[in-house]
Length: 179
Image (cartoon, rainbow, N blue to C red; front, side, top):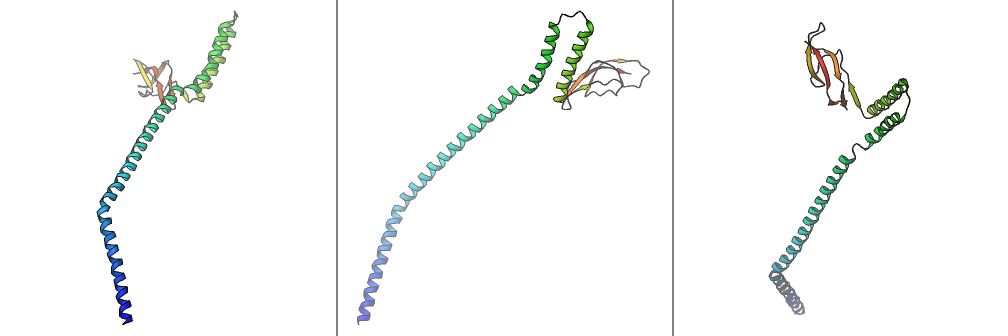
């Protein structure tokens, strides 16, 4: 009988534990929607804050990129301009010379032309001087057609040289072409 009494006490204890668990679970089920709502509201607030942060970060990146582009445009020619200053200085110095000798002026102009050619080489500016070449409408601009004994559609004379920058035409050469 003592075993039965103990078994009965154990069963009563287990039943009480089950009742407490059921009561706790039912209380949790009743409180659960409120807890879920609070948790979801907290998640929503976190998500909204994250969206605002990402949106602000995107705006900052866009603004920085715009600033970088503006600076690149503004200062793109800085190196080229600095190189041209030496050519300008040479021309100014030539104008200050009061020599009556034409040869000294020619020598000064040659030196200045060489400085300018060096700057052009440094920045991949190439001269288009197509005398005797086939006419290329991508690089040449025909001013007139001449009756000539030469090969048809060939450049007979160059009125103004053209220039390219990194193989892109800055200015086409003005030419006369044989018919």
